[in-house]
Amino acid sequence: MLVDFIAGARPNFMKIASIIRAINSRKIEGGKLSYRLVHTGQHYDENMSGSFFAQLGIPEPDVNLETGSGTQAEQTSAIMLGYEKLLMEAPSSLCLVVGDVTSTMACAITAQKLCIPVAHVEGGIRSDDWTMPEEINRVVTDSVTNYFFTTSETANENLARTGVSEDRIFFVGNTMIDTLLDNADRLKKPDLWEDIGLSEKDYFVLTLHRPGNVDRPDNLADALRSIGEGVRGKAVVFPVHPRSAKSLEEVEGLPENIFFTDPQPYLEFNFLVKHAKGVITDSGGITEEATVMGVPCMTLRDTTERPETITVGTNELVGTDPDALSPFLDRLFAGEWKKGAIPEKWDGKTGERIVASLERILCR
Ligand code: UD1
Image 1 (cartoon, rainbow, N blue to C red):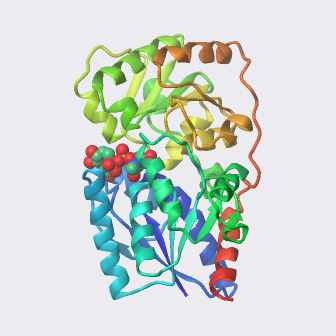
Image 2 (image 1 turned 90 degrees about the horizontal axis):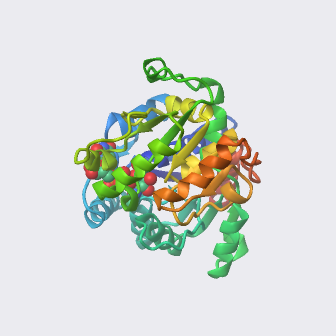
């Protein structure tokens, strides 16, 4: 039985790594499933893709669709055309997609139209914010998904509300956290640590890449000024996503305590998060990693599809108005940030649960 594992963009790679490890372990014990790793090529740089494969021990993709950059429709259609051709020439028994990127949605639709069942890892989460391409990707993907591997009870409830029957929902936990726990002892101090002169719990990590936050240079500059002033002179390390880099080319006069750097490899990035005083971000995945590492996290968005990072974890929703950050920083500097706990089943064994469920689904 051949299962396609789809990976296309940076946040997919750490999610798929744990499932690959689990399926390989099962194979040694006589497991009957094989996989074909399909990289759509949505992210293609060494910084955004190659370094993750190397550091996380992900094997070379069996197929690379090499679709590259483009508008939402261009990327979606290029991925669909490439994946359809592959499935017509060499069909698989199931298509497993992860997360909420364009590759996730494009491959799920393509497989289902060829009557190949779809499994969605991280299914069921919702921000209800239709300005985010990821939310559209989630809803469309889930509408053509047969089997849902979920990270939270909230996701299970969201799916149940849309009429998905219980036997199609597998509450397994979080594969991104599998990878984090697996690599906890391998995290690496980046060279910039000495270059900037960082010290433990005395700096912030910042990431911004959502179109709403970064596509307008003046908005991005306002947010950065507000952050630079708000952190009371502490250093802010900002690994710049290519989308944000474009806007930054057009702005000047940014705070000197913000250090701009290339996107960091996985081990270096999580080292920085682990030892930071706080994280300021508009990413979803980083709020999960900060929660597990117990690091205070401030999310510059109005909604989250990962409410457990707030109700259980160390995350708070700040909103997109840069001035809204101030009371949160006050609380952090006063030493009054909540401690947080680990959400249910985020225990490092999610990949194994997924592979065991796939065996039951496909080999019965
Ligand atoms: C995508 C995902 C988002 C995810 C993010 C992580 C969608 C809808 N969005 O957004 O959910 O959080 O990735 O990075 O799928 N680029 C490069 N090198 C690369 C890849 C992209 O320079 O390897 C450039 C592109 O040319 C483009 C920009 O980065 O100008 C944005 O890339 P794109 O893949 O369109 O979307 P992201 O904003 O990265």
